[in-house]
Length: 374
Length: 250
Image (cartoon, rainbow over all chains, first blue to last red; front, side, top):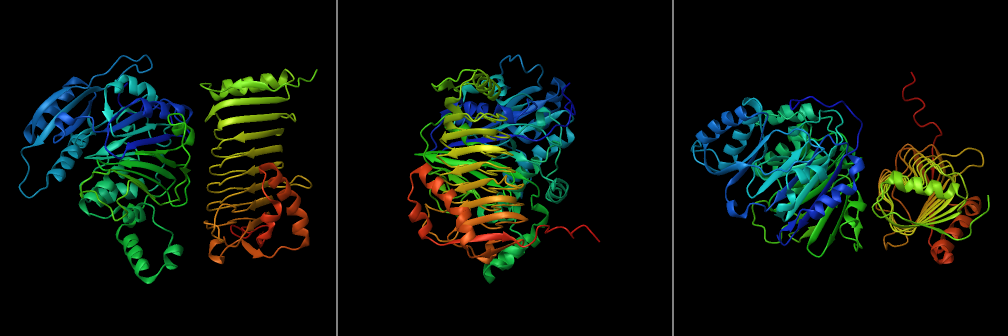
């Protein structure tokens, strides 16, 4: 059956990996598939997925909606709704292949959209976010897997390397690839609950669990984000959109919100920094992401790796020329890049960032503009 | 069984960890006492549960739980290790010529682990000892936060050999520690320590305990022992053997 829940509760694991070419040169899916496959034992077949940036150059200025429908009638419902809000420049069934281990899947379509019917004072991005939330919450059996420009999320129930074959990822090229192998902990394994989670350009893969999910979700709801996908990681995508796009916080401060330093550490800081961090914790106490996590987060311009403040989940990173790697395990990177000298461990709560060399100012953070900064 | 002198070679490329560990067990049961395993790429549990004094040479990146629960083998890894090196090991040795990731030496009961490079978070977490069974974990490079967390016994030394900084780049050192001893080459600020430990100077008994182990470490990696001990060391001891004894007792 396609409707959740159809998986038993299981114990922890999960694998995350991200690969970025910081010059913006596209490369095939082979590296990311081999990397995530190396960590197969961390997942259990109840979720696998990929995010790929740079895959739709012919439609790069249009919002690419990847949709999941539980049956074809849901598609008609959703398309009626989309037609009222957008100009649909192109739409098609997402190409898939028959894979033995994946016995059933939702109806999968993609649309390339330009905004047509938005309220005059609303930004285009806010309008898209509102649309996504409306579809997930109100059109029964229809879910948005991704909604960014020139990117897409390909995910489902299965091992990640099987999901890659299912979506024919060998036919795509991207300059950022994220992948996730899932071992569901407290939530169900279903197609919409696989990682990555996405809103606009933001995609997130996550190893860990967020005990603060309820608090985070209630706070985000005040800003119009409704969590409908029954997996804790959904709040991370919306948190990034709220803090970085709407509230325009630089990444180093976003890190201090989601992985806030302990009060004891804040008390020992210089007065100016202490004041900033105290206010951040007070203002955004409901966006502190509590519990063990390592995330890889991407948008058009950057790939970010971060763990919880006391590093209760593993994460390592490395770079070689203009390639940047972030992964749960070192072996996953070594398997695709055997000659890597400098593999590093990020400190708890401190983001590592791979920055597109040609990126515009839109997502610029206060950290250095160099390609690979810690 | 007749002993076989020549090292038995296993190619790990493309093998699942179960296949690899079955090959290792079979080779040991067949009487091989020296194994060369090449092409390791993330396979877990290598050498787990083996209870013979055999030699296992590994090339590659060893997966999590290298030498977990083992009781006797000598493992030498040319490459890096991932999480949980020597998990609950009982005896034997693990020598890593690269670095290791988090929770290195977790819950080790005895034996020795030498890491030439750096380690991640929580090295030496909950190492323990009983009578003459004392695990030793020596780290040549740096160690990150929560070093020796909940440590209940054993000897943990961090040499910080590759850094110009005198102070370790870590905090919460010895949080929850209630047994054993941590030696640090260089120094730590009080603010880097957990509440359960205090920093002391070494005495002659410490030298008796530490120096033979450091000599072995220096010989293993061809380092200069005299140069290592030229720098000052400090030791961290737990303030109490039951730091949380009163926490839940009213």
